[in-house]
Amino acid sequence: MTLPARRAHPCPHYPITDFFSIKSKAEYRYIRSAIELYGRATLARTYSNTSVYYYPERSTITGGLVFHAPLAGGKLPLNGELNAQYILHDDPDNVAFDPGTLIYSLRTPGDYTGDWKVNMRLKAMLQNFSIAAEFSAPLKAGEDLNYYFYEGIYTSSDFVYGNTFYAGINIEWSWWK
Amino acid sequence: MVLVEMKVNKDKLFTLLLIVFQALIVGFTNIAGKQAAMEVDAFVISFFRYVIGMLALGSIVLLRKIRIRIEWSDVKMLFFLMFFGMFCNQILFAQSLRFTVPSHPPLIYSLTPIVIIFIDILRKAEKATREIIFASVLSFIGVGIVLGKNIFIFNASILLGDGLVFIAMLCWSLYTAFSKPFVHKYGPLQLALILVIGAVILTRPGVFTALRRRIFT
Image (cartoon, rainbow over all chains, first blue to last red; front, side, top):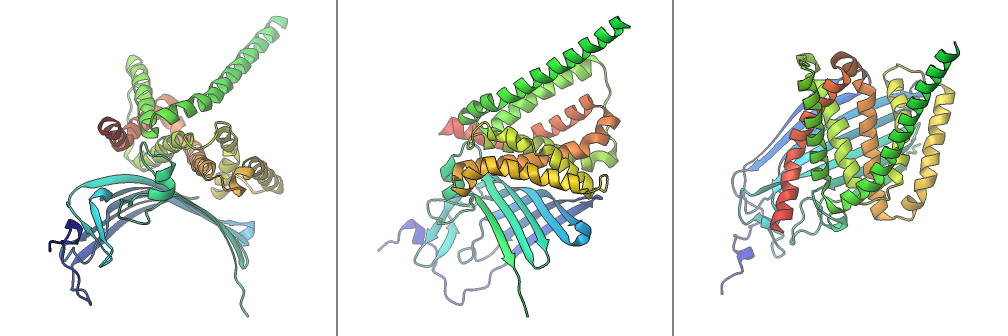
């Protein structure tokens, strides 16, 4: 019996065999009096045994800023981060998922696609109480709400979860004795 | 004496009319922008807006024979201004109009002075007095009350749109707060041209994606 195309790659044997992968990161920080600006680039490559290990992201270029404001004489620290990312990744339509082995794999390597994403985080702390607002959204040309809420950056017909729109308010209260 | 006063008043009236005219244009931008954003992609809108701006400003600079020289030490800050003020602000604003109602962006943009004051406090150019903090909190509460009904009933589309506008507003505030010394150094026309050229280059990949989708789908 011939296996369907998606099952054509070898099933992994556990523990999985070794693979060789490189993840590199370069960052430049430009510190001003009020804010820190940064530019960051990451690169990910897997060179061997790609049938057992798959990572969709190829490169991410990030530009953003961080600020730390010690308001009220340092009693009310306010931290914030704002950045925009350009994520270069495999075209999700070329990615297959095998539910039997729970492995993602690439059908035709080399077809990259890029997506923009914006992220924001503001956090205020007062003693052991903190409140943080977070916002993250992908940006893609010509996409509708379905893309923002359900598909996201990495989603193909085989992926369940992508990198979608997220907005949240986190309230934390730490207590110890 | 009376003639001088009348002239001053005429000048003031003209300035006032210009401000009203500008407010009207800005007001209509949101309504027209909403329609444009529903039909054309945000990257394409921004790209062509910058291209038109670049051609117009470039023509003026060429006609006036103004020479533009960028100092190497300013490149980092100019890139920062272009990235946040031109690129992020414009793309996010255009994209947000697809999802929110046209009345929300100007309301959120009205927080710009408050954010600039906050940046000035961070830079220690201004002191965080009680009055400033009270006024800032009131402004945020006011905007929050108007927008809150959409946030707390989880109208996801408007929440996404308003969130994008809020980030766009932060980007614009950063641009406004940090661009002042460069406006003095290079002149408003030259600075705008430098930044618009950068934004055109950065918007290009998104435009190609949008056009490819439009052509091949």
